[in-house]
Image (tube, rainbow, N blue to C red; front, side):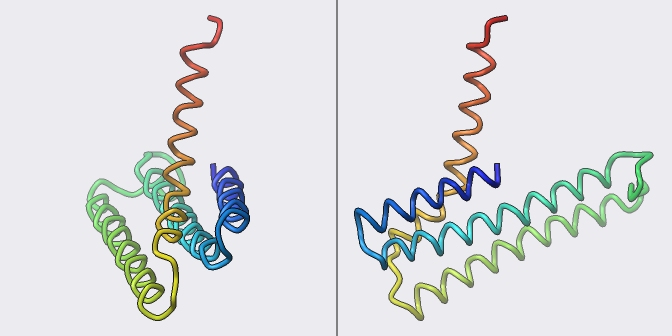
Length: 129
């Protein structure tokens, strides 16, 4: 899904550059990179957290330390959200970035997840079983 996000971002940036302006395409690229990077870090954190809950595997936590790992996961989530907000604040405040392009770029992962879900549902309901 990460590759599909990069492909969709490339299509968005090229379309924004052709039909819009370079400043709009730059804002789309910045928003898309922020969105994809956040999704990648989130995916890695969720994978590590879920693997730590499976008993009998390497790196699995004991029952008493599950609460600590949950707190760490939640703290990482809120820190990442704060960091994204800070980056967006500085981008908007310090440079002349197009806010609508930034918002369009930030929807990259949302669109990719939606497209993946629709594809899975389509294959499930319309497969010849």
